[in-house]
Length: 187
Image (cartoon, rainbow, N blue to C red):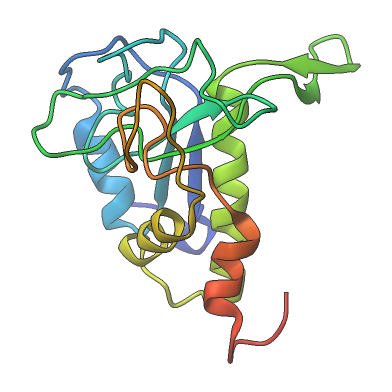
């Protein structure tokens, strides 16, 4: 009956799973419940690249979908792109490094990996920092900070920003923190 220890609830859930693109509403009530509980739902956009491939539940309006970029800040060829199934909802929301990211491996060693599952944790980390600097911020406010401080990205396919490839651009943790740092102490 209910959450036995609500004080132990996470502030952020980083999700590297999903179904195919298109509209599958099965998970939506769960994602909506997270937001209602003030839990920020970050999702990897998916690795099925090109147009219209952002996976469920990353494509929900309530999810914050993350695309992957390479070392040159270009959209990774595998990164899933919008549009999603919801009218007037831009997906992905934002981008982050997702190519040749150093990570732990199953055999107890380290190596490099590719994927939007490597990109989403960058964004979750910035959200965690924002919540430390400004714990009073709502999910909607954090989303706005992330989007407004992201480095806008364009290319030949996406000549304007925001767009269906990079979303609002590449997450900029320093700029996001700086936007709320004044008057709140130091990081």
